[in-house]
Amino acid sequence: MVGGGPAGALFAVFLRQLAELVGLDVAVDVFEPRRFDRAGPAGCNHCGGVVSESLVQMLAAEGIEIPAGIIQRGIDSYVLHLDVGTVRIDPPGREKRIAAVYRGNGPRDGRIGDAVGFDRYLLELAAERGARVEPRLVTDLGWSAGRPRVVCGDGFAADYDLLVLASGVNSNLLAAAERLGVGFRAPASVRTFITEFHLGREAVERALGASMHVFLLDLPNLEFGALIPKGAFVTACLLGRRIDDDLVRSFLAAPEVRSCFPGGVLPPACCHCFPRINVGPRGPAWGDRVVMIGDSGVTRLYKDGIGAAYRTAKSAATTAVLQGVSAKSFARHYGGACRRIDRDNAIGKFLFACGHAVQHARFSRRVLLRMTRAEQSAARSPRLLSSILWDLFTGSSSYRDILERGLRPSFAGGLLRHAVAGGWRDPAPAAAIPAGRSSHA
Image (tube, rainbow, N blue to C red; front, side, top):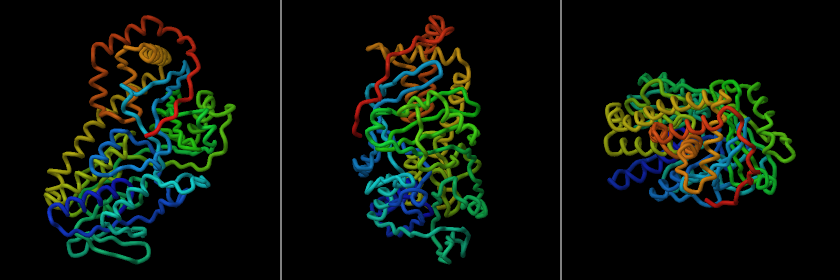
């Protein structure tokens, strides 16, 4: 196993669990050089760090209970910011909440203390379930007598019956995986941007509260940006097609963003990075005795990467134990899980293309804001647009389910009514939006 993030750790947990059930004696080595008990780059896993309540429930059903101390902030609403106004959106039915976590142990000079990050917890759980964690950096992959070989930077090398690549798309090992000759090609990827600001718990509570703040701004190449409260810190994330320094500066300078910080002033960033994310596979994520899971193979477009790590890890582990480790076995069984994610992502690309068109047309932004405000202010409103926006930004539902709701005649009718009622002019300013209520996940 190469990579000890959520996909790798969960695979180790599921493999050991299933092997025990069928009476197999399976040894699992997890190669992970990062120290998730350290703040900053040494323990960073390049992620905004949002998990859905549905994922927490799925893990609980597997006997994996996320300790309360890992949750930096329970998110019980999000605030949508546009240049034409702002609206707070509560989760549909007061369910589908999300939680903010640190994947590692927080930003550089973060002063997080003894907090345990999400990835550290899962890796320690894998070790408790019998996996051996090797703190070594894998630098190359190869073959030895028909078995995959792992080569480390310190000269260590070992051969295995199954190689599981869970190193993500920011790893140089993807090129080595392509050279294995199993037909694998590195997934297509784009750059994102993540940075951390230290405000202090009281300032975060006053400014952001228990809300994630999402920004649909008319900036070139930006899909959307978000501010996520995490204890004493705020994580800023930008997603789009070509994120660069100019776009980052424009986003952070936008009045809609600055209004979320005390006095409209952004403090110096504790750290920042431009990690790449998987936006689509370019070949099978498996071969004989080789399988790629999580971001190394197939993941959800823009959202719910940890949920996709869970699904691919469980499917790959189930295939390996119950069906075998041949390319044919993975194609027949694990391939089904990959294709379901990939098909749903195709719908997601269409949805984001529609959202991109709305984002860059002022008339459409007015209609979106007007309809969302109307739904949130009406006690018995069906809240069709609100639920679509919530799931689109949080990843709480499949893109297929979101599209089906968007195709309902009642949704189209609502859009038409609000377009006719006042989409030609900016909505009246809304009342001040409270930062958010305290919440526990």
